[in-house]
Length: 128
Length: 128
Image 1: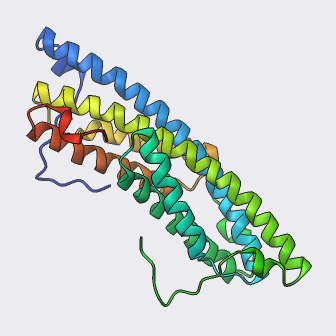
Image 2: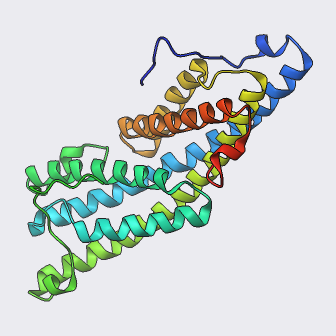
């Protein structure tokens, strides 16, 4: 992780919360929101696991057929599609595009490794 | 998006598939997998929208209480937690950590903007 030593930080804990009732109320609200954020992260990480299992299968099919890891037409389709879904969901479309670039870049790296291993998904071991 | 002009690419389309039956079968399999990938992306982008709505609320609470955007204890907890969830789900934990860095970095940027606006979430307009 990137941790800037000069960055101002506040650790939210019960010691701080005990100082006064108003702070205690804010800390309780933040803790409740953090539980929801953790639940969302559990769901997203589980979905990312499924996504990489699917893209690993695509990587094997592409390698065996001699297709390259990159497919620009597919990427253009994904960019437009995720932009639209983000706006409808109330998410900054820049975030959706950063997400797309992240997963597509990582999937292509893995496709390249599968291609170099002659279509053997075993190169990715348990992590597709 | 990052598009390397020298990068080898293969556009999967029906014209290419029509060439021979084996290629057609591979293309059909890839298309089916891509539909599943698109479904996963729809779910993830929708969850990211919810995540940023929650972190925007955290940002407002932190700004009003004078807390800094960063909280290292919370980040250490998230790193360990997401690593564990990733391994259990069969996802490369490096991918989970890249996801965490991406969302936490973006959330902190937004917290900073809320703090600079004196706790007004309006600075983020419709995109929390």
